[in-house]
Image (cartoon, rainbow, N blue to C red; front, side, top):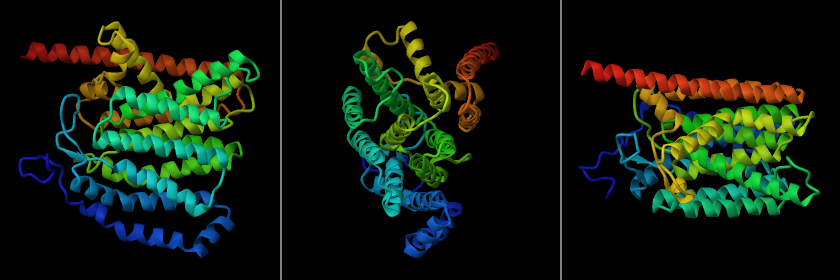
Length: 397
């Protein structure tokens, strides 16, 4: 179907004036940052992070309208159907703006670190696979298989969890299995959360913020710069993706959501999280990513117990509206309250993670248990609220 047919309901092609007015500012910032003098000035002042942030922010802001026009031109659109809750065909390719802005911010800074370079290569491969899915469609099982192979490539180059003793055979295999589960799980969980305007982008920005804070606290500049680049790229794209009174102008698409999930999950493995113990080091990123982890566990248990899925293949292929943001929308009744609620919950958990750097093992365990209990209570209240709402609607009719 052509995007320009009169019977095609496509979100407006015109950019809002509130966004257009900032284009000259973004252009000026980007041009200045490309001048070696200004780059050297900021780096010499010890604020390389600010340079990376402004560069990724301005470039993402400038590239997003371009990618939107390309998506409209080549009919790379997300059409409403089935589990889709948006009303108009909406351009994809927002993820391309984020990937390019993120990558350029590193090339311009001449940041060369082996682990980061390998992780970025893996992220670009995952993003390209997501782009193919946005454009032509790729079977879920094939996407999952390719993602696993990309993670194995990371492991081959030494990027792997060290939860268990690495010098033992059983420790190596357990670390390998958990690495695959962690990265592939977070990658797809972020993709699942790209089901409501601004949600995946905002969550990625929040998670990148807390990863960056911990990185600079623990003297890991490369990890911190990477998190800052993700933050800037997401914030540059966010105004086009989240508008309270109007639909999004462009979506991340699978390319963007899987890239962000993959890079953030990889950063969690690359980073050094605590001086205390492996339990504390594990609990720290778990709290930052808790919203994604809980949702993945919840939908898996609910779908299995309800009989919606009976095999692994059915679980991989199943697409539904039972994710946290869908359930909150059914309860709260509009598109932005669920998003803000999830942002607040993720921020609270992220703040908890900052306090874990020098915490005892018992403190880490208690915080994770607390997050679990809050999530369970949250789900119970949400379920009761939906049930009461349905009862009232039924009685009123």
